Image 1 (cartoon, rainbow, N blue to C red):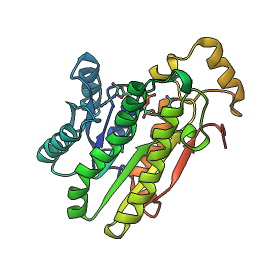
Image 2: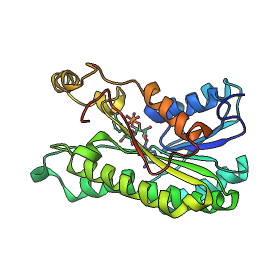
Image 3: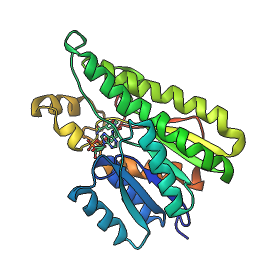
Image 4: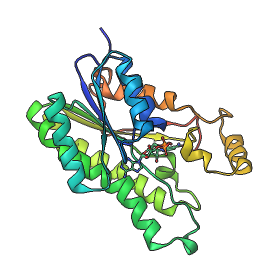
Length: 248
Ligand code: NAI
């Protein structure tokens, strides 16, 4: 028996990057996978194809996680199509890095809306179904910089720290209904998001990591499998760092 057989997962921002690898790892463990991203483009279609090729039910949805209405709509559509949601992975996220003195209100608001408000939007929309099921696992993508802070990332760090407070509160509020809520705090993971960082700055980051390398999205996905599965049936309210001992 695979670890996620008969479970339905919804992963946000999963056409590429960490979200995509979580969707693939879930499908490999037998889960049915619904995923979202901003647009139904060729990138989403390719991910959908890869998931279907793994022999599970899978579907990509265009949905903006920062929008309350859009999140309600997509969650309702997923439940209509898949029947339930056992695992919600709030993965969608962006960066708009800058020193505080140069950070605009627009960049602050955008990062808080996409990274933090989205977690409220999707969790709020999904909780009613999980409450009826009396089970569920919510996994929120935070970051090591949500714990440690980082110069040039005041907006991003604040959004990721906010996710941790939200995760712990939901764990306490919904624990009695067998709904678990945990966060993953990745360190430096090699995706398009970190590809934006100039080569010399990236090398300097990697040199600071005790394991001397950036992580792969698949290495984050393994932890998401653990938290989504019954292997973690008594784990809730936790932040699991996946960072090669960076910022510990
Ligand atoms: P990525 O940029 O490769 O992928 C993010 C995906 O989210 C993209 O497909 C993007 O279109 C989608 N997205 C953006 N805004 C959205 C919205 N409003 N609604 C729906 N989808 C949206 O990024 P990556 O690296 O895969 O990051 C995934 C998550 O992991 C993010 O929350 C990020 O903050 C977090 N993270 C990443 C780290 C890294 O080193 N790559 C480190 C720590 C956390």
